Image (tube, rainbow, N blue to C red):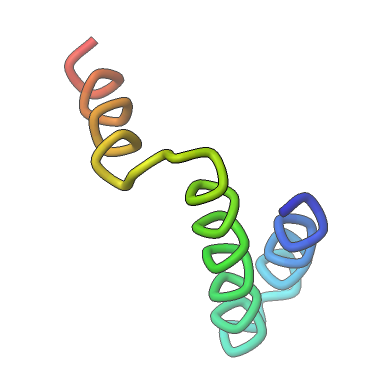
Length: 55
């Protein structure tokens, strides 16, 4: 996940939207795998984000 996040940041810094789209896909895939391995659902994540928005 760290490596993919770095690649997203690099793609964003260079302004290459095609590269960023591909790297973002990789980052999300690996994040979802990590979430599943830790039994974290998207609903769990959305709940945290909602709490930040209202806090």
